[in-house]
Structure formats: structure tokens, C-alpha cells
Length: 205
Image: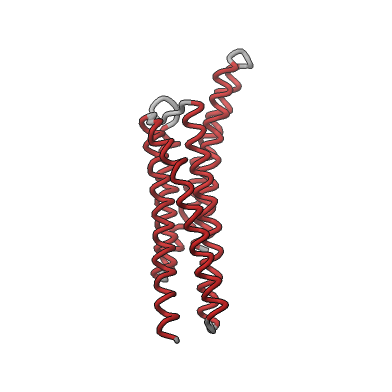
């Protein structure tokens, strides 16, 4: 019985890793869409969000099966409860990446014409998601600590982008409503990236 339980715990880690990879790919495609103004990449992010949602449901079912059909000890319970919390954060990462893609499509935002720091935020968030899942699977406390520290990097980038956008809006003085709306769209993208980094930090914690 225990051997079967251990095999299913291995399967749980594998599915968590796969879900994390789906999130990484979504952020990577959103980053490319930002870099190149690639609308097809942005559309792909939206389409793939359903896969992340399905992964959440599959992992949740496996966790409940492990809890109800087996007799997990305290260490196992901690692992399973952590997995249930992680998939909630990863599902939100998928949603927020999809939201970014929708803004890219509707507002035609691109890193080259807007803010290089947006692209930097996106790449940092992608790395944080990857590292947080790896830290869980490999029980790597040092890597988890680095993810938490990197959250400060994303926060500083966000504050820098926000400051520049506020200055742009102030300079328009309401005369150029199109530019002001565009600035608002860009700051929404930055805010979603900041939230993705927060979710990666939750996983690391």
C-alpha cells in the first residue's frame, strides 16, 4: 500500500512540474508578444489557459484521492496540502498571463515601443515561477529563498515603470487621451506581472 502511495506522490510532483511548465510557457509567449508585438503569440497564451485550468482540476483530484484513499502521515499531509495551495497560485498565474495577452492584443503594446523594463519584469517573473516549482519538487530551501528575494527585484521594476507612466500621463495634461489610455494599459500589464511574481513567492514560501 505504501509503495503505491509513494508512486502516486511521485506522480503528483510530475504533474505539478508539468503545470509549472505550462505557466512558464504562457509567460514566455506573453514576453515574446511584448518584445515583438506578436499578436499570434498573445492569442496562443489565451488559448492555452484552458490547459492550465485542466491541470489544476487533475492535480486537485489526485490530492483528494491521496487524502481519502490512503493513510498519509504528517509529512505526507504537509506535501499534499502544499500542492493544493500551489495549484491555486499557478491557476491564478495562468489567468493573469491570459489577461496580459488580452491587453497586448487590444492595446497593441510592445516592449520596443514602450518600456524595456516591462520585458525585464516578464522574464524575471517567468524565472521565479520555474524556480519556485523546482524548489518544491527538489526540497531546495536555498532556491526557494532566492525566489523570495527576487520578488523585491520585480517590485522595484514595477515602481520604476509606474513612476515613468505617471510622468507621461502628467505631461499629457489630459490633452492626449489616447496616450493616457495607452499608459493605463501598460501599467495594468506591469501590475499583472507583479502579481505573478507574488504567486511565485507564495509557492516558494
